[in-house]
Length: 314
Image (cartoon, rainbow, N blue to C red; front, top):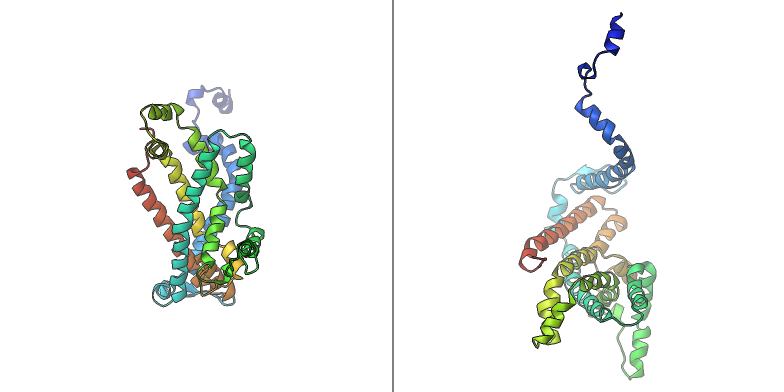
C-alpha cells in the first residue's frame, strides 16, 4: 500500500484542520462579495474624497496648478481675516436658531390636529407631506421668489386691504425671513414622525388626567411632551443638520450672491462661491471641514445634554 493511499485513508481527526482565516473565508465569502460594491463606493466616493479634501484644506489649490502646501494659513485667514466668513456664520446661525424650533412647533401642532381622528386623514397626511417630498428644489425656490417679489402674490394679497408691501426678497430686513418661512412650510417630514410618536402614547393616561381635572394644556405639558421627547430629540437633530446644509433656496432667491447686503449668505453658499466662483478649492475645503466640525459639535452637545430632558420608557 502506497503512502498516498495511507494518507487518503487516515482518520479525519488526523488530517490537518483548516486555518482560522480559511474557515472565516469559507463562511463569510458570500457576504463579503455582496458587500463589495458598497465597500468600493464607500471607499472611492466617500472616504477617498474626504481624505483628499482634508489634505487640500491645508493647501493653496485653484484647479489650474498643483496644490501647494500652506499649513494652517487657510484656517488662520478664515478666523482672523475674512469678514464674509463671519457674515455667513451669523446668517446661518440665525437661520438655524429660528427655522428649526418654528418648524418643529408647527409640525407638532399639525400632527396633534391630525391625531384627533379626523376624516380623510390619509389625504391630509399626504398633502402636508408633499412639500417635504419636493424638498429644497430649484422649482420651489423659483416659485418662492415669485411669491415674495415686489409684485408677487403676497403683495397682491396685501393690496386688497390697501397695504403696500415691500419687496420681501430684496429687502435685507425681510429676505432671510422669507427663507425661514420656506423652511417652515416644508414641515411634512417631522410631522409624520410626530404623528407616529403621538400614536404610541396610551390614551388611558389622558383619560385618567381628565378625571383628575387636568386641562388640555396641562395634559400636553405633563403627558404629551415628556413622552414625546425622544421624537423631539430625533427631529431636532435631523432638522438642524438639514438647516446647516441648506443651500438651494438662498442660491436661487439671491441669484447666487447672498444679497441684499449678505443677508442671505448661507455658509454653504459662501463655500460654493469660494470653490466654484473663485476656484479657491483649498480654502473651500477648509470651510467644508469647519462646517463638519460645527455640525459634529452640535450633535455631540445634543447627545450629552439629552439625558437631562429626553425621557424614555423608564
